[in-house]
Amino acid sequence: MDVVTGLLDGPRARQAFLLRCLMDPPWSVRLEDESPLSVTAVVRGRMWLAPDQGSPTLLGPGDIAVLRGPGHATIADDLLTPPQAVILPGQVCRAPDGHELAEAMRQGVRSWGNSAVGETMLLTGAYLVESAVGRRLLRALPPVLVLPESELGLPLVALLGEEMGHDRPGQEAVLDRLLDLLVISVVRAWLDRPEADPPRWYAAHADPVVGPALRLLQHHPEHAWTVGGLAERVGASRAAFARRFTELVGEPPMAFLSDWRLTLAADLLLEPDATVGSVARRVGYATPFALSTAFKRERGVSPREHRAQAASGERSTVSAMASKTSQ
Image (cartoon, rainbow, N blue to C red; front, side, top):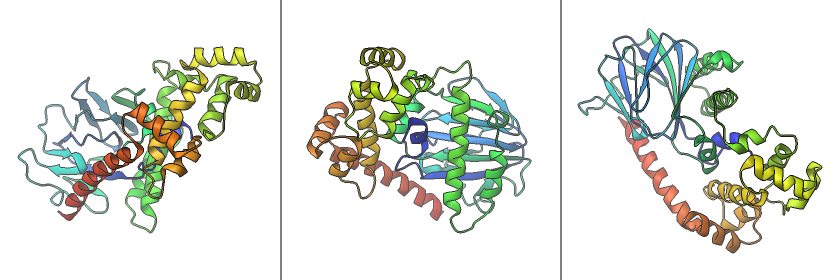
């Protein structure tokens, strides 16, 4: 698994929240859900996106905005329209005075707003839990990025909007995959822009020597890699490879591998049937003790404590979502 895949394919990444927003002016919504990652696409009409930290941007049909949490923002038909709803953690929706709005603004299957049709239609998706692998890439993104769908080369907004109106067997899985595809496409297109500042390891994937080595490390962390073995696989001398890798990635090959193994382990430990032993084998540690020692040293908690902390956060999210659904 590489980092772009891991952005949305971690053990908890499938708990995404999706909604069509149907709005007639005047309308304004505060986004205070603090999701690690959220996306809003304009199907028709227009909206202003005004992050609390940053300049407002006007979006039209086909424009897509990705927001990296936990920052807050406002979306509205006009910057002067006062907020009428606030989206809180767990996707709880309240009016500014605190009363619940979930049922009052429900407009059918995965649809919400102040209108049954909506002069403006938005598609919104929020990832409620962040994966450790994905965090490596999220740190490289700006708090808010906006791209036109035309840069993606695929009509993903219209397709996602159509599928969100259906309620067929397996629909949640279809929507999760479409949302993943949309976000991955936006992130890749953004990182390929001249003004982007991608992390060094991301840019190094384009190098004919270091790129293949990175892919070997990321896809096969369980292998007993050495600098010499990697150099041989990519057709370079050991010294030249080590120097080139460190120069392009910013750290030596084995340091990159150690961090990558622990990052993967942090996600894999959260899988329901995972044991420290099974995860250790998957990420290249000889024993559960070796993984536990390295994990505690680098992350400050044991694998058991890491799982307990994640479970506590997940229970809080599920509880908030259950409360919202019951309203």
